[in-house]
Image (cartoon, rainbow, N blue to C red; front, side, top):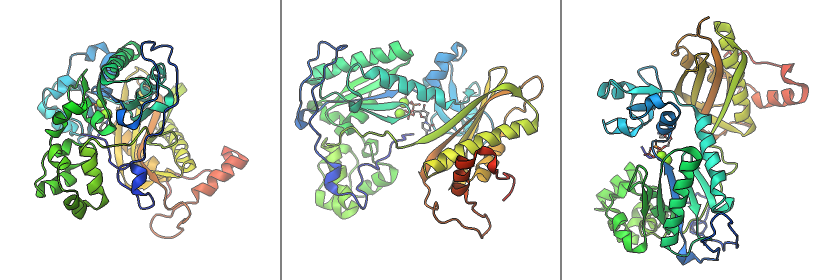
Length: 432
Ligand code: DCP
Ligand code: MG
Ligand code: MG
């Protein structure tokens, strides 16, 4: 399943159309001691070069790397328990058997009873990407790198390459760097605009490298319109009604007809299809996609009340972190590591987006009961929580004191804690 969204191509109400296709700014001159063959220079908009990098079967590949007994086997990462569990990703061995991202674990096990499901451990994967970004700084300045998701990034290599030959050479060097740094494989796409670059990455997965020059446009044009970055099932269905099935057909469609159907986005889709995406690197610093907190204990625990108290502690921490950023979450992942070093982890979707300690604690405990129950011979040593699917907290200034679920003045309580210390007040999490 593709996790990309088109949100930054679609003009928001307050954002003018021209902002989206803003001209790329002139790149300053840099010197890159580690990449001596390429002389830095200034390039103009017409000659831009981007590389898109995406790890192959990311979580699964990391787990296989770290646990040799999983190598060469069908592995899924995500839920390990429960009928409602979801496969977050699957190794290429599992994909060959028909297992895919977002499939239910139950269905996956039916297709492949030998499937090994392992829990996901977010901080490990995040660390890999951060390490990679650091490593990429020997090729381009950090300003030219956009971390797009947990396993992919865009690199604007315009300041350091003059043509597609050099861009390909640089992409190969980056691939080698990834292997040296992390011992993982990734696939790369090279093109003159971000949209084509992202699509190019998928051409030769896994461990691929695809260059799309203007002369190779036809390779993009042949793709079904649904494969275009930013176009999902619903839009492709509407395009189908207009007899537009391939990206090439979208590129040559009438702008007027597209605008009649999609408003200003009609022009955007058409331009993206034509390779006229002029967007540049977007700095995501400060924009949170997920938050997590992990805590390894000094004394391992197994009694129910101790476990409950640890989950409560981690919930309070995460909720406070959410509120400090004025965010609410729709999804929650809980992970426990036992003293035999095995993990159990699972996620759940919340009914409504929240940062209420009570709701998140309740959801976390509902996940916990599905895990192997800790006992004296199997104690818990680490608790972790990740919240994702984050949204702005729209009710921040409208506390409700009535109704079925009374919203507590958490923001005010946080302020009190900040001023007078943690012990000043505590919310009874079973209340409500
Ligand atoms: N992921 C997730 N939920 C999804 C999709 C993905 O949690 N619905 C996680 C697991 C993936 C990681 O994000 O390993 C990266 O997502 P990708 O879409 O890049 O998928 P993979 O890297 O797993 O496979 P591919 O080789 O197709 O890129
Ligand atoms: Mg990937
Ligand atoms: Mg990806």
